[in-house]
Amino acid sequence: MSLFTESFITTLFLGAIAAGMPLLLAGLGEQLSEKAGVLNIGLEGMMLAGAYAGFVVAWSTGSMGLGFVGGAAAGALVASLMVLFCVRLGLNQIVIGIALTLLVEGLTALLHYVQFSRSYPRLDGITTWPIWPLSRIPLIGPILFDQNLVVYFGLALVAGFAWIYRMTHLGSALQAAGDKPAALDVAGVDVFRIRSLAVLTTGALAGLGGAFMSVAAAGVFVPFMTHGNGFIAIVLAMLARGRPLWVLGGAFLFGGCLSLTTALQVAGVNVPTDVIQMLPFATVMLVLLIAGRKASLPQALGESFVRGAR
Image (cartoon, rainbow, N blue to C red; front, side, top):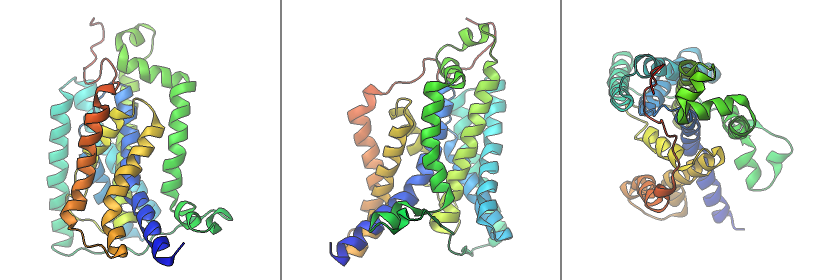
């Protein structure tokens, strides 16, 4: 294999991981929320809150680990508003989700301007944890086995969620909360608690995905930097039909589309940036046309639960 081809493949796959990891984390969280019956349209806002908080914490403390924790906490904080208004008070999930996204977009842009004015400070390079001796494998070793801990965590989460959904009582309770919440309530399980925990976990994962975007992938925070990633993650969760492995495949498919710009530049191919940036959304539309009718969603998705109602 020529040095040119090796550089192209390495750039493409490393870029796919960097761009796909936020989608994977947010998509897994949205899948969890949807299983419990909550359509989390505010995912974009949770990712953006995590991106801003993660960057600020990492920039202030010099610790990227604390930045990731701060991003997850910010995402969970935004999700707590979703819990209050939608799960506890029973307000419309779509309206509240859009409102939260618009609120966070304006708030993070304002806070960034107040703190940094028109400057965009950058973070130092991210620390990776090579898995020896797998990281020494030619070509694929540095790509797959010399990554940040968040990447390993995201991949482990795919297996963990698949096990929870298939093998545990919690997985059954989540499924029932999305399909037959009244029956779950009759069985003595607190539907509000199940849905609340699912939404808070979704917020934490979306915030972690946003923090990965600003802290690890870009090293800088730019207002509105999520650019619709939260909505793509919602589509991924819907099309995955409850299978975390499908979220993984979809996330890195779209991540590969996003990384094509850099990879083609390495290959010396001059393609307009706007065309490349359009690819993920065009891919979403194509996948929806092909597989949208086969999407399997919980029966009570988006519906508020009222105890005692039938």
